[in-house]
Image (cartoon, rainbow, N blue to C red; front, side):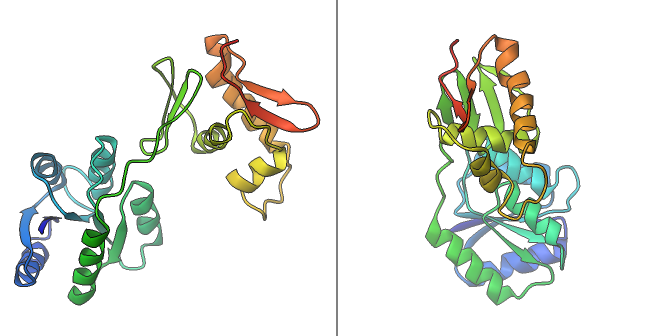
Length: 225
């Protein structure tokens, strides 16, 4: 089993390498994000250990670029101690697991073995409804190959409508799936975001794919008229 360790802390990376080799792994080491990204593209690894704070290219960007390129090698990201937001962003950019520094080497090995057993996960399915194409992995939306820039909330609303393509969904369903059950704001916020989406994915293309079904909610149609 071949592991790539990407960390600019030389002593830590060398210690991890020697420890993993003693456990029977073959290990390559990169001292920065740029070299790590290149090595991940040149060789096949069973797992990647990726530090966050590195010169040249952060661990977040390395992870994101690998996922955007369709590389789903399991990634364990090393985060700061008590860095809740580090952990959130690590998972949001496509990491499979994280471990806070300082860490137990025994736990690191157990996490790596678990990731290797699990293997590479499949890239999430790209959603298509009519001319609209949404990639949940890269967070990209296109209409007729034209990229559309959406905020994270607009993206989430559109993704929910596309996953329910052709079905009528109520305002309450949108709130429960895009916001949460405890949302206490004005439920008309859904209308606001639907309006934003129409201005971005429909009107510039002279389409009307996001339909209002009076008394019921919204439906995403094929969008060709």
